[in-house]
Length: 147
Image 1: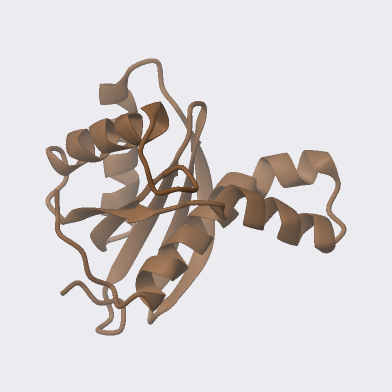
Image 2: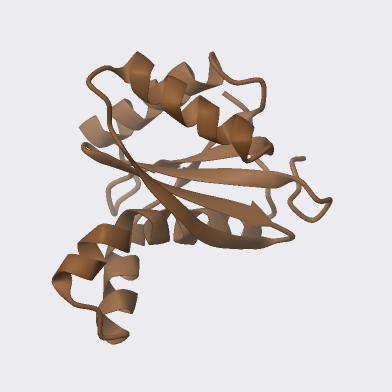
């Protein structure tokens, strides 16, 4: 089992079509970290994220898997799986997938409730969604099969 309770840092990635939200989990708590814009190629995006993972000294990576409400997978899920496999082939730490249903909606709603304007919400929603997904993984017991 990968554990943030033992001092390991876990990176959460919320993959999107244009941006990747990035969160970090330390001591059982996930926090938004940054937003990384998708590069022109998957390889360049993976290289950029691998560098960030190394800089953060992560012991594992959790990639959000966008499922439909009924649990089925669509084209976004296939893209997330492809990204996770590419990342797993490029980094020396375990890469796992975790359900990220409704994380962006939850993040946007929380920022709206906090009174943030639309521009501010757009700038932060991806990294907050990544933190929500990563916290869900942590709360679920921090387990998963590496890709």
